[in-house]
Image 1 (tube, helix red, strand yellow):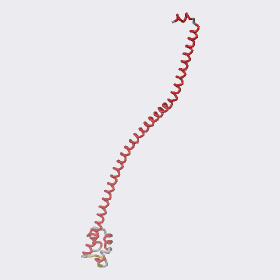
Image 2 (image 1 turned 180 degrees about the horizontal axis):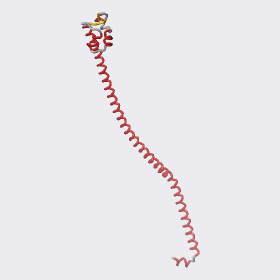
Image 3 (image 1 turned 30 degrees about the horizontal axis):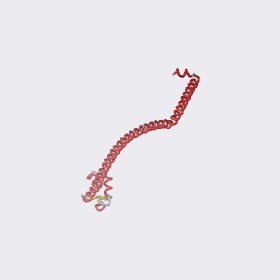
Image 4 (image 1 turned 180 degrees about the vertical axis):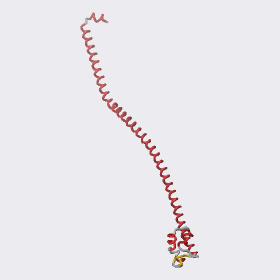
Length: 171
């Protein structure tokens, strides 16, 4: 049987434009027949056009499958990235807590260091304080000795002034 573009379109359920385009393909040219001034194909040509349509349909199906696979990969990648973001957020929260604890420890260390410095100042000033106390103690001892000498001297003077009988009976 002989098929023109209109019959091909009707038989294969495609548009006339697609039928004309398929008839112009290089793989269909050997099957072309010119009948009553029209370009037509025989049964073998019709089968060849069907094959090109199947090839296109397979290509389209493969492209569709590939697009679906790409979409699924994108969705998987988005999910993985979201999970990574959540994991990193959790890590940041843990690190923030650790940094807070380190800051508290540093503050406590600074306070303890300041207290230690004040103690060291006191300890370093102790020799000065001890020296001052030693001087006060020496002065007090000197004053006590002076008073004791004065008392002893006064007693000596008073004893000399006493007569022999007063000395004997005073005991």
